Picture 1 (cartoon, rainbow, N blue to C red):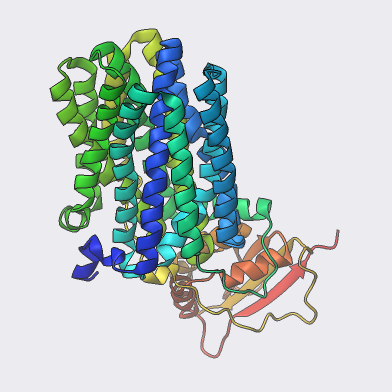
Picture 2 (picture 1 turned 45 degrees about the vertical axis):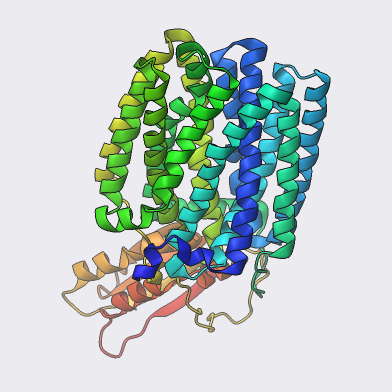
Length: 527
C-alpha cells in the first residue's frame, strides 16, 4: 500500500467523493440532532431509562431488519433512485414529527413510531450510499475513504447533539426535528449533483430480491474473511451499545445534567472519534489490525467503568472523548476490512451485513442494557458490558482479521464454453455440475487437499451442496460435484469467480495425469 493511501486527504481531493462526503456530513448531523432530541424528549416525557434506551433501538433496529434487502437493491438496481426516494420519505416523516412536536402532541409511542420510520429510510439508503462513495475512489484509497466517511459520521455525532442541546433548551424538540428535515434536503442535492455510478450492463438474468438476499448470506457464511469480521463486529457493538444507550440516564441521574449537558456528553464521544480518524491510517499501519482492535476494546471498557462509577462531569467528559477515539478506531477497522474483502457484485450486501452486525446488535444491545439498568442499576449494567467488551478480544484467536487481497476481489471473465447442447431456461433447476479429474498415481492425498479448497468458493458463489467422489472403477478418477438452485444461479456463479479462485483451480489441475484434461458435465433436474 502506498504512503499516500495513509493520508486522510487522498480521497477528499476527488471532487465527486468530496461532494458526496460533504452532503452526507450534513445529513449525518441532522440525524444526530434528531436522535438527541428524541432521546431527551423521552426522558422529559417518562423519566424511564428503559424507554430512553428504546429510542436507540428504534433508530437502529431498522438496520437489522432492512439493511440486507437494501443491499440487494443497491447491488441490482439504480442506486440514485433508491437513495433519493428514501430521502424524500424521510423528509416527509420527520417534517410531520416536527409539526406534532411543535403542537405538543407527541407522546412516547408516537415518538418511538416516527423515530423507527425515519430509521427505516436510513436503512434503505445506507448500503447504496456507502457503496457509491467507495466507487468514487481507487481501491488503494478505499481504507482512507472509509475513514473519511467515519469522520463525517462521528463529526456529526459530536456537533449534532451539541447543537441540538442548545436548540432543544431554547426552542424545543420540534425545531430540532425541523432542522433535521433541512439537512435531508441538503443530502438530496448532493446526490443530484454527483449521482452514483450506474451499474455495468449484464447479459445475465437479473437477481431477485429473495435470491439476492440468500446469495449475500451465503457469501458471508462461506467467506472466512467476511464471517470473521462480522462476528467480531457483533461482539464489539453489542457490548459497546451499553454506553451509548445509557448516556441519557448517565447525564440525568448520575451527573445531574440537563439537555445541554447531555448534548455535550455525546459531543465528547464524537470529538474523540474525529481526532482519531485523522491519524487512523498511520495507527493501523504501525500497530496492525489485531493490536489496534485489542487496544480499542480495552480503552472503551475502561471508559464504561468510569461512566459507571465517577460522578465528576469533567472527568467523564474527558473519558468519553477517549472512548469515542477507541470506538472510531475499532469500528472503522471492521468496516474497512469488510469492504476490502468483498468483490464488486456483493459489496453493497457486504456493507449491509456489516451494518446489520453493527447497528442491529447495537439496537438489540441497547434494549438489553436498558432492561438490565432498570432491574439492577446503571453501574451494574455498565460493569457487565465492560467485562463483555474485554471478553470479545479473545475472539481474535478463532476469528482473525485481515484486509482482502486484490486477487480475492478481482473478477475474471468465465470461459465461454458451457459444454451444453441446448441451454435451459433461467429458472430451470436444480442443476448438478460434475467436474472430473484423472490424476497422477500416488498423489491422491495432495490432490484432495487442493481440491477441498474449492469448496468455500463454490459454496460462497452459489452452490448449495458440494462433495468430491472417487470413482470405484477407476482409482485415478475423481469427481467434484455441486448443486446450484437454477440455471440462472449457475451463470451468476461462473461470473463471480475471482483471480484467487482461478489460481486455486490452476493448482488443482497441476495434479492431472499426462495428456489428461478436466471434463465438465451438467445435469438438470426433471422430476
